[in-house]
Image (tube, rainbow, N blue to C red; front, side, top):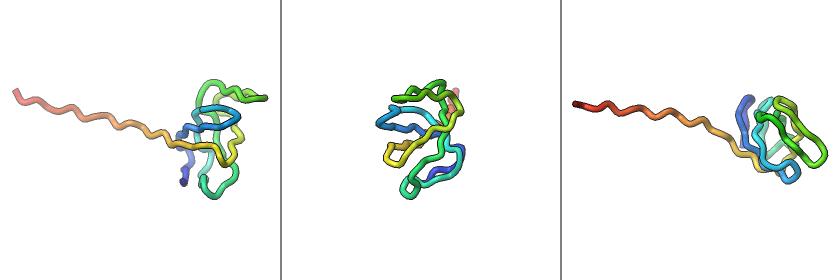
Length: 81
């Protein structure tokens, strides 16, 4: 899957758990071994490290990456009196 720079992601990692991240630069999950991502939540506790919002996180291929899509606002239907 191709990821664009700035895209919001939800990552499930065996060592770090589930966390929200933002792509620092474009990458392809099928070709690249390491994913360039930065944390997009307050704190993340790993087995040996702690990361804060905006810090780069080493994310290796094999972690499950899900793209978080923004919900579009629904259009209100006009009522005819």
